[in-house]
Image 1 (tube, rainbow, N blue to C red):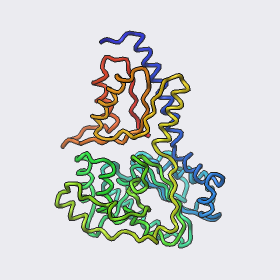
Image 2: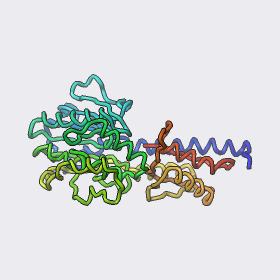
Image 3: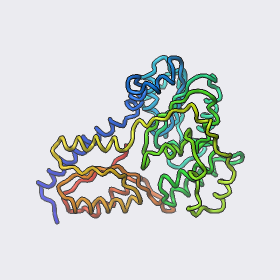
Image 4: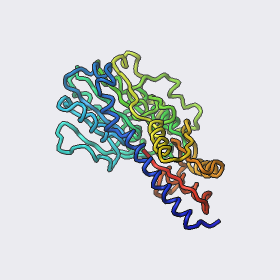
Length: 359
């Protein structure tokens, strides 16, 4: 089937509308606005009261760390006494590099390396040097699991990179990956709580995971865990990885979390709802999928293409957390590109438009 000139013009119009909806979705889950809303005393009086009216220090970790720290600066002003930003290489835009209060670090993602361990050491040093009674604002977003880590004594960058390559090559979902990451880390799975002292902590989360479980976001650095949350018995771990899992300290006790308040400030559902609303306002018939699309990205692309054929004339809007099984010598690109290319083969010759994009 060949496309007509009218088909091409229609697809260009739909593409433009999808991009408008995408921009609206991005604005809704933007880290700056999300943190500013969270620190609004009228919207969250209990959380802001816990932080008090004096000096506050902030840590931001994740791909949205720069934006979240920018939101903290805007909301707190001169009350922000010190800050630490740990984000992916090339993601420091938005933070004033001349602000002497804030230290900014870049680390590797998605394959953790020596920079991730250096970031972990910097995180512990930052926490250790804070005044004992100063409130802490902890800002965590997607990517934090790879960006920062502290391993058991004697383990280093080669061990961490080997684990991450194994996780990616196996095509595990985010929950499975994070269970393994927690098993080998001295700060994940809530263990970082043993390093914050008796200070009040506001933990603000931007979720990119199915179910928005705080234990999964950033591998639950400051979230209480039980042993079952770190169970990896269902995974076929190689012997070398089993050995690493046996080296970590015990989980943090319940009292370590007594003064931590957790708030989810943005999630995939927020972006989905705004995108769907924007498209409805433009006259489209929209089907909004409440469940995240999970699983292999190539299979997900085929599913979406066939769904488009079955429900022609409507727009399907959904969040996703797909995975890619890497070959021995992977090329460039990621999950969205894999999904889009898979769908494109099925959609070839049809008047259909697919937008696969990250937030």
